[in-house]
Structures are given as C-alpha cells and as structure tokens.
Image (cartoon, rainbow, N blue to C red; front, side, top):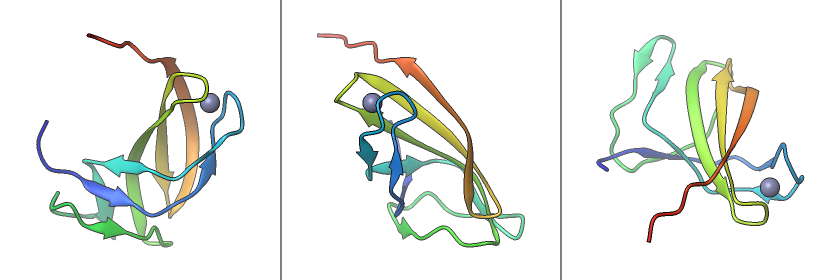
Length: 84
Ligand SMILES: [Zn+2]
C-alpha cells in the first residue's frame, strides 16, 4: 500500500510477450536524487535509475524490471499469488 509513481513505458512481458503498459514504481531516481512517490506519471530518460513493476494478466505473472540509465533491464517474472 501507499504512494507510488506511474512509469510511462511499454515493454513486452518476458514470459508471454504481451505488451505491458501499467508500470508502477516506488523507487525512481534522477541523477541520484530519489523522486517523491506522489502518483506522478514519469517518462524514463537517460538520467533515470530505479525499478518498475507490472502484472501480466495474460499469463498471471508479476513482472519486476530494473531501470538503468532509462533502459529496462534484468526483467524477472514470478507467479502471481491471488488471495481471495
Ligand atoms: Zn505474460
């Protein structure tokens, strides 16, 4: 829970290649300065580092991606755990 930022990016799911475009992040920095988590829409650029997360509802995976110099890297998927 709590505040986060939106990351305006489109990236295919590493598991099924479905394009994902609802990225959220609680840790983004620009030139080393941490951005406030204030529900802002952030466009990654070459000065940005951090991480972002999305959920692929096509294959039910949580997708976690690191951002280095504005580029997504080290994408990881893990099975979505649903609680209901
Ligand atoms: Zn997927």
